Image (cartoon, rainbow, N blue to C red; front, side, top):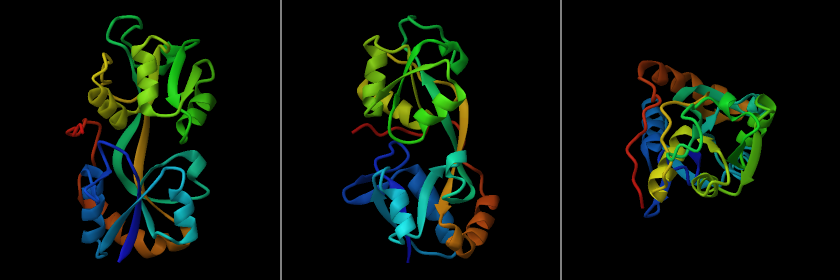
Length: 218
């Protein structure tokens, strides 16, 4: 049995419901691992705890993580299983222009969660953008709808879920302004046991791309 951890919650791509892992990214990773000859069992972790669980040997793989430069020294990655990225979520009332380009946010206040790698990436790559750090996606989007921020910078898929779930007057972006491929992650010392077979399966299957998956609002 291959123990596979995943970030919970990560709607609309992965979540727990009725004690069972759900979502299109869970099903894709389950299929890839099964077709590679392994039997996966999925285990939810918070974003803050999952990499430590991998390092400690509590899990064998992480089902999905963004392939980012700051993770290159700590995680080995499979071939990508999802093309996602960071997108701007803008109000529908015309307070901000319709551009989804982060360059249009120079000297404006953009809300984004403080946890995870996104805030550091934005600070490093777009220093002219002023960040309003929040505790959650929901808080970031409410700052936009309330007029406290010009836009929210969020994961393309997860941000779209929360716009719909909260019913906020915020547009859904057509595509990210910064691509982030997501892949299965492993410790370097174990990657050779799993990734050759898993990568062979990934190469035979079409990747998930930008299209927003069906959204289950609960």
